[in-house]
Image (tube, rainbow, N blue to C red; front, side):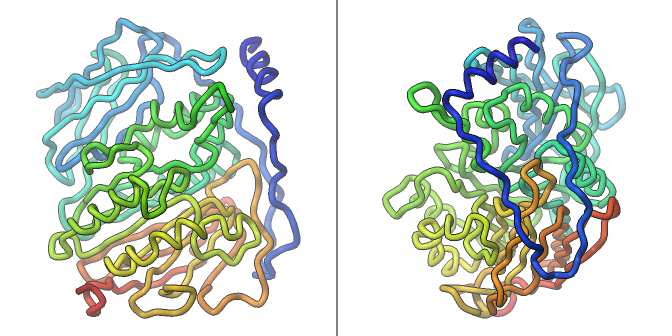
Length: 428
């Protein structure tokens, strides 16, 4: 505790904490309960050799990356796995590292890629040669496939409710467009977040991209994204990217691109060049669905974070439109909003559907100030905590639903059937 207090005191000299977004209701008619406090979670393991904060992610075709932390530097970076409990017929070794942030020292962070794995199959695995057994289920190799979607998660009572609702739905992959732990320089909160999400993140792949709360840079002292890059390694190398802040992956007929809102994105940037190459390589016969995620929304009728995605949108919207991207999912704004198909500021039947879902349960509260009148491109909006579910049924149809959780129950509040652009002649 003393070290954490000292670290916080040091950070006080570098940081200016912003106030949460507040204001009048959006006029959408829902009466919200009071905010909930940040959770107090134990994060130190009983034994230093025990694997902790276990989470998994996709790592190229038929492979999965297992990530965990241990306090024991001598524990091997190895994963044993098989299709029967306690019977490990295969094993893989990986890499490990740690990092320091002011007075904080992380445990040993392990990343091990296992595979090749069979699709739609349950595997049992053990990390570090000891400790508890975990199990995961690989995604299917063909339609249908289901995604759980939530942004700006945090560690509050509403986070807990959101995770419980996600656990109740049947999904194959979790998509998170930024703002994970809300550690905001307090590194022990990365550890408590890892413990909080482990029950879900150890069983289904979590595919994430960075948000502003992951940056954690200190002028002259620390560059950005140190903890995020160390703890949440995504398949950027497998997708030809040179940065963990943007990458792509394919799963069961869907090509998904995770863009970085907080790294250069203009036409002279590495990210722009990579995106252009990645889109060129998309085969719509093999992956008829094309989805993009980024933290900052491009179309937003909320006063919160208004216009922050303008420069990125100016550089990249035409690329995504020409490629026939079906859906653009963002977070950042602590409310939910869904648009019609839109391009260049107006309705376009071949444009992208934009979904803002920065309402996982963060400690800053909801963004309740929507602009009125509502723009023509905005179909549904509500300032409530919740999560989304995207089920890609086949090559032509998908079903999207958003579930409010402010009631402590998962209430389906918005839903829509979506036609793939490839199926209606928009992709050439």
